[in-house]
Image 1 (cartoon, rainbow, N blue to C red):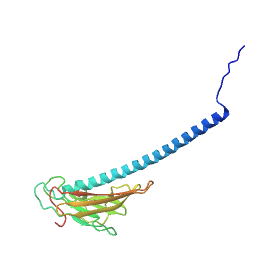
Image 2 (cartoon, helix red, strand yellow; image 1 turned 60 degrees about the vertical axis):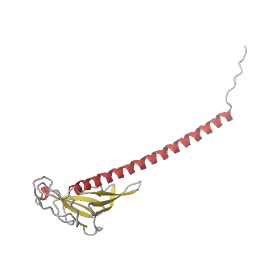
Image 3 (cartoon, rainbow, N blue to C red; image 1 turned 135 degrees about the vertical axis):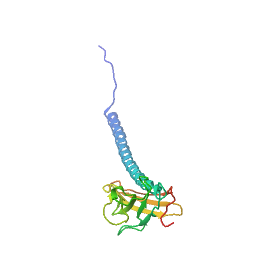
Image 4 (cartoon, rainbow, N blue to C red; image 1 turned 180 degrees about the vertical axis):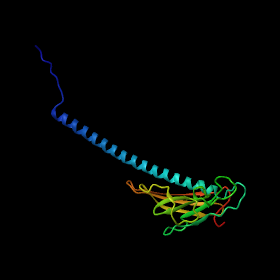
Length: 193
């Protein structure tokens, strides 16, 4: 009977192969961890951008309508001031004929034609039927559990407004973003102009 001589891997060959495989696996796992962290950071940045866009769009909508009256009635000028303890120009109250009845209704508050936005304690708040930046009845439109509104400022310009908005994430990964938007009221009503 004849024996076939077979050759295989020796113990050092197996050990070198295991070592190289381990290095490749560890490197791959490190790359996956880095990709995951980058993905989470990008996702959080996108969320803060979406919040920024939603809040600016909401303010933009009302600023664009400021001064509208269906039958040419007298519309009060927008009022820009601030709530107590907040930065200058961090509140705006504006007026427009929402129901197109030809007049600016100031009462009852639930159906009034005045709309306000203000910065208050790190949140953007809105109110309908208000005529001043202080007081109660304002509701938060920003999520204060995740986002801090670090800046809200309305600057009257010659034919419109510049709205500055700054947001800061309160949870990791911490980041902040600031944007400005120029708004031209369709009815030409600008505070103090």
